[in-house]
Length: 218
Figure 1 (spheres, rainbow, N blue to C red):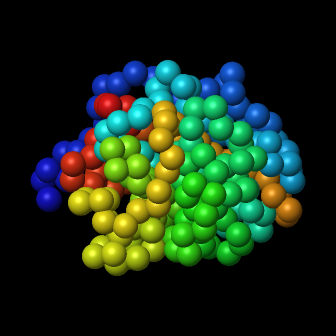
Figure 2 (cartoon, rainbow, N blue to C red; figure 1 turned 30 degrees about the vertical axis):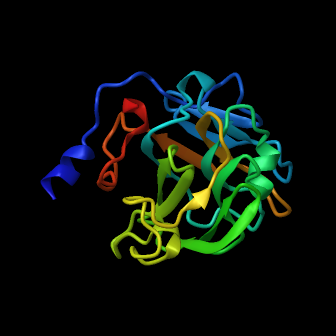
């Protein structure tokens, strides 16, 4: 337990933030850690970390704070994508990485490499709207969870079925250099949806999975 708590402590690190040069139809604030969209239905809305802080190997962890029920569009969510991916490709079907995407209500569907995994992560409580992302770039798999009082269900499943520790389950991502990314838009898109990135420079909501490290420490 102590090791898990220590792993959640913020660490000195480079200033890894969303990249203003590649952000599209969003306003960045809070030291470029918060991205708020300015468009509606267009899929070309999003922000990602600068490619210099992309990674192709290692077991990495970060968190994104966002709204419980942003809209009923298909583009809203967070995850990891290739450094040259298009926001529309990631928001619509996660062609170049893995995402959790909102389709209405308090659930985010888990997608990877252009396919729906069939799993969903529940964000039904506004007090627990932090999205946990564990990325195993060696196994090329990703897991998502909600930081909430009910415990961790990675990719919405029991720990024996989906668990970043031991690379159990996970959604597959393609080879290449990955960065954290957020997207917006869709058929019922709306403006003013904010996502805030935490790569480990401030306290995480939950302990980092064993064997993983904060994105900022990689």
